[in-house]
Image 1 (cartoon, rainbow, N blue to C red):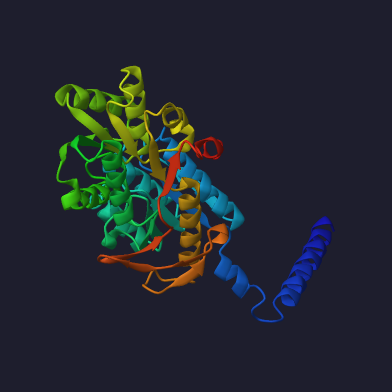
Image 2: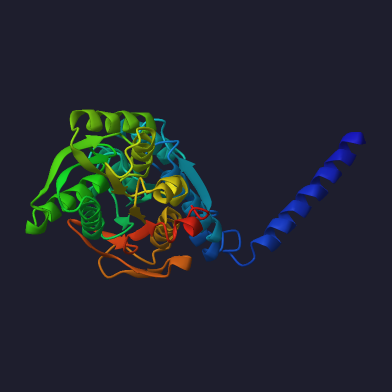
Length: 351
């Protein structure tokens, strides 16, 4: 009797389940996700890889990137190795491929060494772009450039020439020897120096501080020791210019060795106010990272393909257009901005 009762209960429950399944599948396709859900695929994962940790410029860029991704309702994954090497970035790229992120935005430590890893990422369907320091055209879909490289190189030569009266020895304190953005700017500086108006200026050395503060300090001290007649230093890197500013201040060389380059207002305000660095240039790294986030989103959505002529809206940074960049393409943000005594107070509170 007990077995019969249990058989009846089981049969009733089974009939209920079958009835529910029949009702749920009456439209034939109702069990499949809607087209919107298929297209959306859930929250998108946007990864950003900077050169190395402890770099204020990179931190601000990642802040802007994260801001954009939050506006786009995505997930921002921010990564950076301890040391600014391609090998360290490759390890992170491999990890992100395993995590199946939707996009990778990278500030490259080497233009070519990252190609196998980034190609692997693109083969896995990941949208890859570079920002600030480009990787080669085969390693990415497009590049987000903070400003016109020719203008960046030119204005720094114009600045140091004016500061030293158009005559004397100068040196460049760069980041790493493989940094594509730094090398391109230096190339344009050297071309600018070929002009007749700079015939009395001698570029004696291009030193590399590897975007590490201690090494940049050491390289600055070495320049001063090796070239006692040095009149000016150009540091097209935020870490380098701050390090050089400290060395010149500590050694009491204000007005004797002039300093310009690319720096963060918050880090360079005291040196500009004191006159150690009469003026310098930069753009807003927050906006650079922000625009990169919107670029990655436009690629994921299919709004652009990274081809010349593609246009899209990049949030508060406005309309952007993809333009030619050698063998590849890029998106440019604007002209470098001049920071000096008259405006540094307002900007040092911003970034």
